[in-house]
Image 1: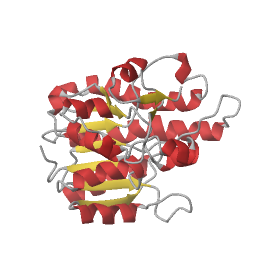
Image 2: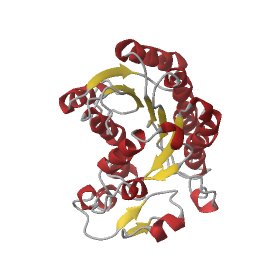
Image 3: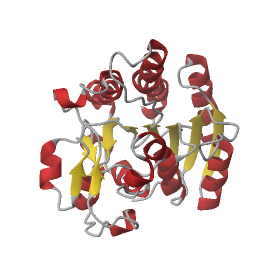
Length: 288
């Protein structure tokens, strides 16, 4: 039940959920490649690939920070090659990098539309494609896409169709690749939070401090991801996991550690099906 010695390739892991997943693996003694664009400190966002690498090393893992724009095929190929050279393989691919803009059709300029599709859908496809030859050689290979369930209701599209299309493109990678590579024993799954997660995106785009106070820490996604990674890959594929449901299946009953500042209902995240809210013992109020 440990990731000691395993190698993770994580896109966009310099902060937030990606970094939390990296640090959870590092505590087991895993190797982690952080493939992201942030080499210099951002005025509004914490963390770079280098500060992330320092945190991974301090947590007990080994780190490889790689400056990588996942829109660029050559950069992804080089990042994967450097990972294999340093750590002798790849066991887990985490497609965490994502772009978001919650605007309607008329308010979405095509440059932003292209960015979301290039990073979310195309980036997930490309990073997976480059990692798969190495995952085929691993003993318990996993691909995890931080993407929502394919709940095809109009309400998820009407206010930001471009963003929803880009995120659901990641989910379709899960659906297709899980079947395509089942014979190779590669698990391909999605993971999505039932509640909003206190990240820079929430604080800057989704309601600021008010919604952040109704959110959980990224640690819940990290713990859920870890629980998935240690499961047998041939028995754990093609799933659209919800973080809380994964951990309840592992026997977790106290979720208060993930929302230490919350005093009332949590804010339910986008794309979570109605029945998930209905079946959760947690007080979660959908933002839709």
